[in-house]
Amino acid sequence: MFSREYIMTPGPTPIPERIIKAITSKEALLPAYSKIYGEDLELVKKLVDADGKAIIIGGGATVGLEATLASLIDFKDKVLVLSAGFFGDALYKMVKYYSNNVYVLRAEAGKTVSVSEIKKFLNEHPDTKFVALTHCETTTGALFNLEEISEVVREISDAKIIVDCVSTVGAVPISLRKGHADAVIFGVQKVLNMPPGLAVIVLGNNALEVLETRQCEGYYLNLKMWLNFWEERGYLPSTPPVNLLHGLKEAINIIFEEGLENVFKRHKKVSEIIRAYLKELGLRLVIENDNIASPTITAFYLPKGVSDKLFIEHLWSKFKVLLAKTYGDLEGKAIRIGHMGSSATMDYVYITLIAITLTLKNLNLVPSLRHIPVEYFTF
Ligand SMILES: Cc1ncc(COP(=O)(O)O)c(C=O)c1O
Image (cartoon, helix red, strand yellow):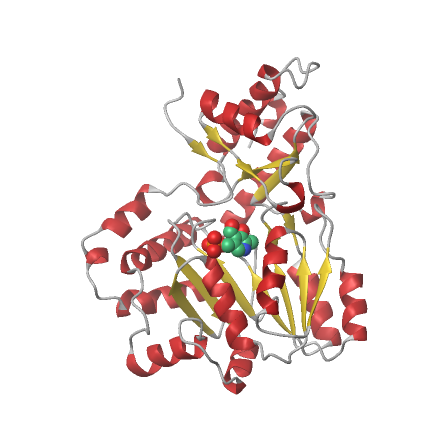
């Protein structure tokens, strides 16, 4: 009955025609990559407002995260990890492979770690070398406030800030130049609407200074090696997925053509409409407070008596709308709408909200619902 699919998962996101063309073009299928790699490095730095240097590695975003930790952290360095759920916990686990002096501040599902807790920790541990966090906890949609956190970290300590920006880059303002972070890591299959396969690392000048002093070991996860190969020889220690490098240039150009500020505004607006509408339907959002809501993901608790599997299957089979289950503390209790990049548009959002409304009705989950609250369908 529905003529197309609406993929509303928190990545991979729907790939625009222009990107498909770029990754399958004749040029993208040739082996040469130096020119396009160099162009991409400048574009990714622009996306996060950075001086410093970028590295692009073939693999999932996780390879970028692990390479950054492996390259910057010395085994004796004290590291504070801020976790708001599944991906923050994964970051904590990863850091433990590279430091034996790791602490974690863990927020309950739907919350972030408060600035006062971070302040208290740093005052008690002024020798903290790194603070690592996940900008948006993709399993709950909770967003850490990087401006506030970086201000406190800089005020109290010399700690460098490492941020997993996998589900925010391109949708939430991030500026290395303004000091929001010293190292950011992201994949390309979220807001950038690419197929998965590239990990991007951007190191600000503070992180580069640390890297200088480090005796990095390992090969594929050694960022010094990647930078040295590129800067001294003009090629990389491992063959990159060349066609994806071509796609990445197109993906970032699409964003700059719309205007980065406009893209931020679009994500914010779409997420506000989704949250207001879900509340109107009587659904409970996972995040406790709108001021920590990520503009890219909204998670909501399922009404009593329905499984995530049934709800998601109904949405898919009847309306071709694909939402995502969640993981960690909320697995089975909540589901997620991804609204990022090409799915952060009103056509995707209208269909999704109507499909959720009708699913609630079809499954007899909201007996009191008499009308679709159309007043939210304005943009
Ligand atoms: C916040 C966050 N970090 C890390 C990852 C892992 O990324 P990848 O699957 O590309 O390795 C994800 C994936 O969804 C994520 O959302």
